[in-house]
Length: 330
Image (tube, rainbow, N blue to C red; front, side, top):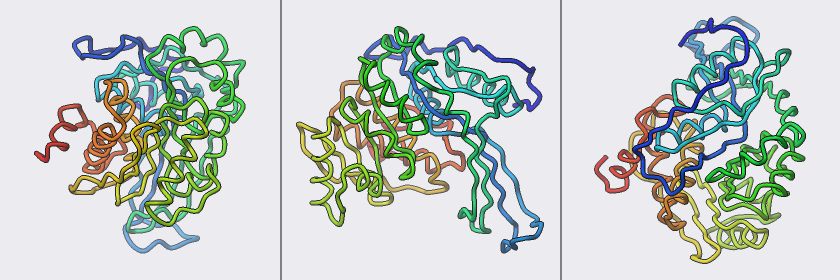
């Protein structure tokens, strides 16, 4: 991947696998964040206030971008709607999206803006010591900017939004989008932004703290998980997947009811990006006509495939890999 791509906005042409059997010909639109992730890990115990020998890694990331790439690996047509600067990081991300087959024709470029960047310094064991997220550029993804895209967006198979978008934009999506929608809360600090979108959501994947924030309920056991999911159903969410980390996920359908689905066993190299793989696989399963509980199993299988690789997106993810994980073959 070149760090010296030519300057100027890139308008990619979609690269789609026409041989994949899909429920619909429309693409999945992912509206959300891309980041350039920069992480530094010291070779020995971290010394604050000093220069530490170690390793610095740079890679494209962001919740929206990760979900989009996972969907492509699962065989879906994907169009990513985001905004980047006309800078080196933006060009690297555009090149990576093009290579992954992610359509960027409806994304935006700010010639004077800074592409979103996430910078973290880790402890020796890889745990984050401190981080800075420079994501102000997403304040530009306003309803006014997205309004001309509305006829295109409503021809998609599904729209997935992440909570890095401004709250007014999420509220606008709730009012104007007519296709099925899914959302990722991203973090407790941003989950509240999803509240206007809840009545329209087909699929939501919060963790326990995000669920407590959105419902105002304290969760202490499985019974509380079911009651919290019921509260989200009353707000309008059809499929609720409450992430429980290493325990698995509480999958709950407004009609089918709920169940605790455990994680699949396997080698864990890295958990970064597992939630993004889950959202992508759960959306793919929905579009394939699968029920909520079966979709949860496939999504957890995709998360397990993701965890077996050091990158936030495992390039070996595929429907076949998910099939094998579900069947216990890998």
